[in-house]
Length: 464
Image (cartoon, rainbow, N blue to C red; front, side, top):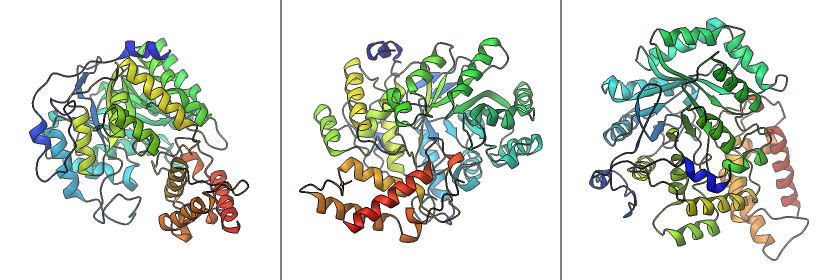
């Protein structure tokens, strides 16, 4: 599909109604509402399988706030701030958000319980609940362990049915097994997929789908099963943003371009649920020269809004997930989709140019999902990558072999920032290459190799 053809898949915006005053409540940050955004009600999409009227903004319960401030990534021992979670979910529901996505794996296994506590305070028919069968480890590949995981999800979520149940991260590989071999061990050899189909017939699962990362052979196989009538997929969750639209498999050869994934689902009428619209925050924290170009087009529109508008534009997109830690993020996202302003053809061309420029910066494709954590040797893997990527974006990754006039300043910025961002005992130098993290990375990053590269680079800077 070329860029012009993409526009044929644009979805419409919702009808107008007043939301501006509500989004400017004193206890919430100023969302920076423009004359173009936040002037109406939430945009909804209809699930063709069930008729569910789903909010285009979906609430990802992956990065919940903790009592120490921030998330568990910064404070792994701090409890979830349940009062703040309750307040934010109340705000979201009041503003029309009705899709909430969680997993047994999120927030060190504590997300489902927190989500259940917050949502059970509202009528069950006011929201759609999505969770996953996150049987990643070989110990959970048995039929009994997978069944118990599903039953525990219902218990933690305080419900007797799940609206949207996903096979979590199909396509992931290990050092020994390809994507199809892992999928068979997780869902086929133990008969658990057929058991889930039975649960759907009993009404305990309303929609059955999967989230995809990695080996495209698995994605294609599951869609072939759908075509053959072997299994029916009610929805599929994919990574979609304007950088991954054309560059996903160039950034990482084990990823798949969002264009291909979206087109394959859309031509079958399978609704798409979108994850990583900001690519782990990367598309919200852009290099200054790109931000300047965006501001020249729309001075009051933040970079994140461009990305959310792109992700929500294609028809067939049911909802766009955002893992929102702070009320500020929630308000901004509500504004963006109240209602959605679809990306125009001209804007799509602009974002494709921006994507080309970002790709040429050669970031490490980490989305800070933290599936690699905790590291048994104490490394703060996501923060190490975040510092490196930030310096790449800002032009502070100097080449010791070819020093420029600004070399000393860039070298100092990189090294001082590294020590400030990552405590010395959690830096890349402490990686022993155990590879325990590799199989958990949805982006298929060779984490030990990147740790070695960054450590060698840091040592080279120190000696220069």
